[in-house]
Image (cartoon, rainbow, N blue to C red; front, side, top):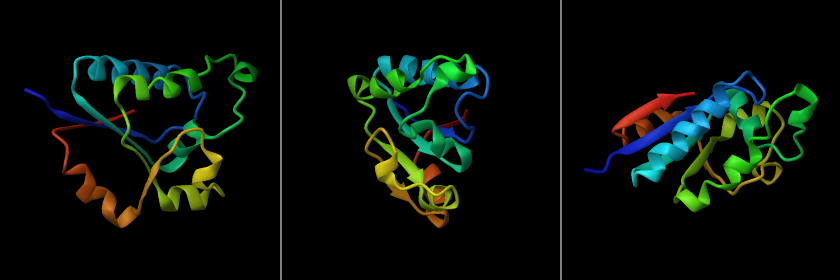
Amino acid sequence: MHKKFLFVLRKPPFNGVSMQETLDSVLTIAAFDQAVSLLLLDDGVFQLKNGQQPDRFGMKDTAAVFGALEIYDIHDIRVEVESLQERGLKPRDLCLPVREIYRKDVAGYMKEFDVVLAG
């Protein structure tokens, strides 16, 4: 039985190993043919910002993992419009194509999923 998983990413990049662990979970679940979507809120929108330099922080470059999402059939990547605006970002500043979602619609969107995981 297929389930729909939503991973909610709220933390900025290079905030410890939790992001790498979350991405590992995303890819593992997707590898078992489960439907996986990502929602980036708050500082999580910085995860997809172009031009990051993780080596400056002694961290792994997660951009390669984000680039692999397509291989795992993960195409539903959404970012909260207000989170982008509050941080001076636009979708063109991100390294992947995303769909925008307004804050008022986030709760309803989350209800569409069988499992919601925060990372």
